[in-house]
Image (cartoon, rainbow, N blue to C red; front, side):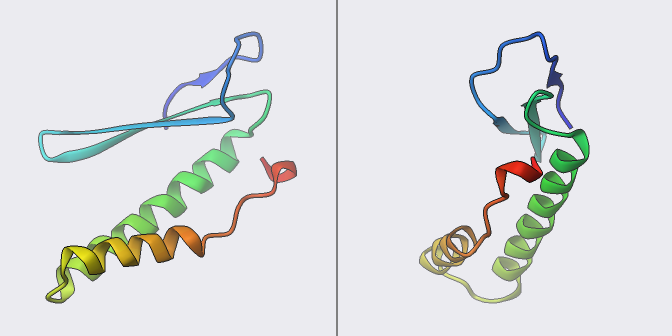
Length: 89
């Protein structure tokens, strides 16, 4: 989990996720404002993201899957995800 912004600090986005691949590992930094989010909510969101990402990777590795099928699967997951109501953040 990345650093959170303090309530006194200005944050122009509700949630900022930055990622990079270093030494063969995906690293994600989740930054959020404590004015809008509870730490537990962001932790749950990050955990759900990891589960979805691992599922997508497993799907891609389990069969002879074309690049187009990978993109379609990812689009399906994104389009069918449920937004988190703002009052829960």
